Amino acid sequence: MYDLIKTQKANVPTSAADLIYILNWDIENKGKTIQKQLFVELEADEQKIYDFLLKNGKELLDMIALQCNFPIYKISGLLLNMELKGVIRSLPGKLFEAI
Image 1 (cartoon, rainbow, N blue to C red):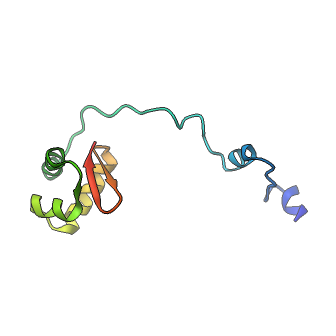
Image 2: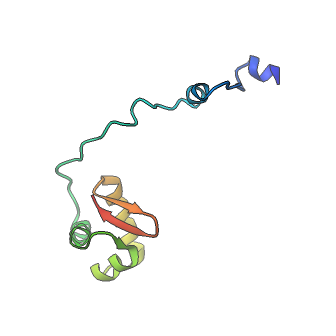
Image 3: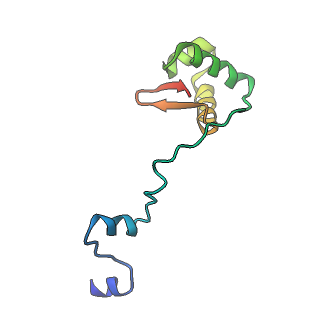
């Protein structure tokens, strides 16, 4: 065990600060807010979903697919792309909402 510590393949944390340092966590940047992108270009299908979510608020994946007339396999990909673009967010329980 001492060889692992000596060769820096293992660490012995003695405080929470040591753990933060060892895991290389960036605590200082956690409180900063990032400005929302103002002009996000959405495809026609994505725009239809986004408008639906703006109108109805939080909605289930199945209801989005039903109301927007898309199959589940297609809506899943569209929602993922929209989430990566930062225009919607997923919530627990297959809920989605516009940001």
